[in-house]
Image 1 (cartoon, helix red, strand yellow):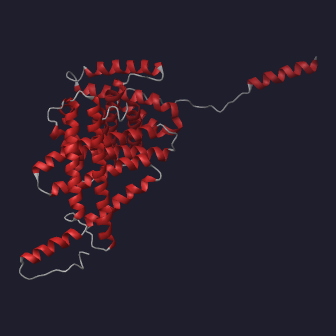
Image 2 (tube, helix red, strand yellow):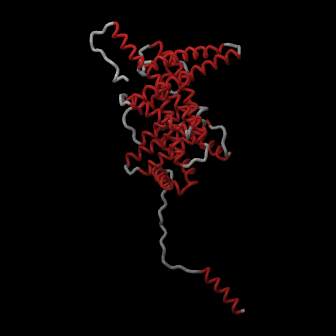
Image 3 (cartoon, rainbow, N blue to C red):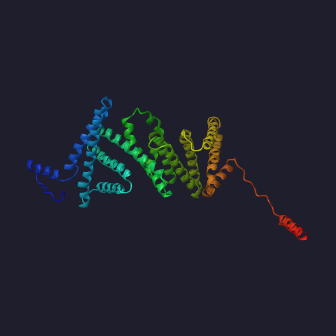
Amino acid sequence: MEERSLRIYQDKTFFTQITNTLTKLLIPTKIGINGMLISMKRNNALKAYEAYKECEKIEDSKKQEAITQKFEDVYALYLESIDKYIMDSIYKKVKNDTASDFEKNALSQYYTIVHLKETEYLEYKYKKQMYLLNLDYETVESLNKPSLLDRYQTLYVAQMEGLYKGLLKHFSIKLADNLTPSAKDEIYTKIFSTLEDYIENILPLKMKKEPDNKIFKEIVEEYQNFEKFSVGKLDQNDNIEKNMVLLGLSRKLFTHSLPLIVAEQCYDKLLNDVRSLIVDTKVARKQEKAYSLLMVLLEEYHVKLLSTKIYWEKPQDREEYKKFWKNFQEINQMKNTNYIDYIREKQILFLRNDLKKLRKNENKYFKIIGFYCDKLIELGAMRRLKNAYISEGNYTKGLKKAKNKKRAKKVTA
């Protein structure tokens, strides 16, 4: 329609301006009918959300319920209008080959999410809402209206926060199912990807909206550590480290949506990844880099996760961890007096503790067990026993001779 519409290239008169305006309204684009409808529904959603936030002060429970219900209805209509815009506008433009690269990519993402509907309905439900909100957020940003953007960000951050939490909770429940190793790895990837998206796109806006939030003050350093992974190409070691930082942040931001038991499984996944990286790497420099990451990851796992663990399935495991924690605190006191000995003793403690766990499945971890033993020998915590036995080549079969004597006695008798 846009290509075939009549265009007049003469000097613009009153009538030509009216013609162009009507033509634009008939074209289903952002500045057309769909754009106007979305704008109206968006304004209604903003007003309903602001009333919903204010209703928390109202004591009348029935009135609170009515305002909440109104917001939910208006919000649903708002999302439907964005969905309709995609089908009426972007789809037609892609079909007619008049769409921009952004619009083609937007439609591709849309169908990727819709494809989940048949197999993963809950994931589809959360991701579709996130997609629609994000699409309109980009539209609001492009309008260059600071007051509108500020109002919209409040609604956007609040809704996206709930959607991310719901999605992480869904993945946490999925991990409890009897999944194949490859299916579990897929869930782990989705968890880390969801955390990354949240920290990249939502957390900065939330920190801006809530500057006095105590949690944000506690995670400033970790958030800065994460930012370094946003530049340049990442290798396998960097990706593991990035996911470790994401897990550390999640312990503050998603305590309930990503429970401790799920976070523990995620740490186990990262530990297995870095162990595999150590034994598979042939370059000594890269192997040492991976080993350094292993030490950091083990410390994060024990300090940030296991030290906060209240419920233990086996009381014996809890008692063993108490012993480990006592030794760790004693070693920590050396940090300010003898840093070299502190680093050495900490490595020995972590390696010995991890060896106990790995030796329960020695066939699977024999390579990394060998690496650990070499490291402990290097650190002076273990000795390599030399095989000093020399055989003279004289073997006797005493036991069999004794049996033969007994048989001979029986025959004689």
